[in-house]
Image (cartoon, rainbow, N blue to C red):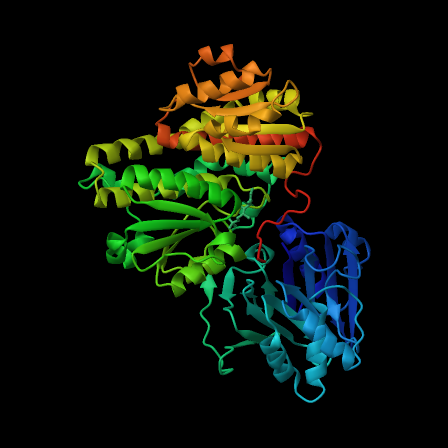
Length: 612
Ligand code: F6R
């Protein structure tokens, strides 16, 4: 999704801004732009397409120590040069970049047009520049900025410069993340840390409603309630530049699939020790503060989107099986806008890699309002969801750069297993059952490694099926969410039509699609529903449908039905999703690359979806 970088300091701003934009490319975007303050004027460049297109128009030696830059993911107005940010006012004295959506922009635009303002884009963002211009006719820039953002409805992360105050950068945040990197004689503002970490590890998180006024020597952050200056804490972030590079892999996605064993190990680190002592439970320090409330909950509602939602579906099976806890999973985008019956005996668990997904964040806010205990399983440390939930568990998967989520999924599953064990031990789960699951859990990274060692078999098969344009992904029980995840992944990066279904549902409709040109991908480990899954496979075979199957190693019989089989190591039924997901991720990756697509930056997609 859109990315923001801003610089104010003693160095030339342009190289820092361009580098920052490149580091934000993974978020997904369709155009980019930069503005610099140069003496008494603002100079702006914009380009459609990649940052490299913008770079062609720039001379990196260009003077200017204050500037803003943006990668845009179109919401209002087509991807075009005129709609790319930054946007300026009529007098070309104010330039700004914006993440989020201004919901009342149509009304504001009408009013501003009546007052004589001329607009040059179709965006919602441009109204903000004109609005500040209008108010600044009678007030100082800071006052005008403050007043303008109060009028805005919707969400925004804003970075603004003006040639009237050429040494300053202004920012404001509501519902869209903005952080401030504190360097020596310089500050870098960005929508995420990857644009900052090569300059400084010292970070200040802006909160909703806050406004920042930044010069090369100092920064002031004011709250939105009474404009008082806030005493902001400077955090040290633990994210290395190396972590956000490809490290020899052709794509981030492949690197991140290979990091799944490490992601699982990191999620377990220090959290399963107690299994070797009395108690046989997991230790989730992030939940300590809400221990007593958690003991009283009678119901869990998981809210999430996309891949995180599918992790949540797996979580439902885990929590109900091991913790006897009634659990529902709901798309975060649906949760907020319908009447729901949550109360203080309900825990609402948000799952999010980025911790910034607008739908999930709003669901958390709604749940809080209703008095529910809110919990988070979040990967990005310090993100908004991590900060706004009552308590949570970090995934510790490290930064995920590839737009399609892979290793975050494995780490979310790991945390869900730990949560199910912890809650299970407080309820009915026996010590020996719990210990057996934990022991097997510790073997999962090695088993994923075995799959990775065998990736060439998956690559070969992907090549064979790369030209297929439709797929049905099918699985039962623990394999059902994996069927959904596998279908989502192949859609996202291969632009192939795929539908994920509960295998038992196939006969209720999708079976009509099956013929010799419409293949099915069965997730069929040897588990308690294996025989039932086989019935579905028979039905496909009877209609001449091609079948690719994930099966447990040693299952040779499946070849009687499946045309091609990808094996996973043996494991517990509840933990098989880790293994099948790795196969499904690799399969999608190889189909995508075989079809010649840039799998790290799939068209139309954004890494962090910060609009509702
Ligand atoms: C799929 C994918 C998306 C995200 C979804 C939620 O590969 O990446 O479906 O899973 O946008 O994002 P987070 O987990 O950041 O809330």
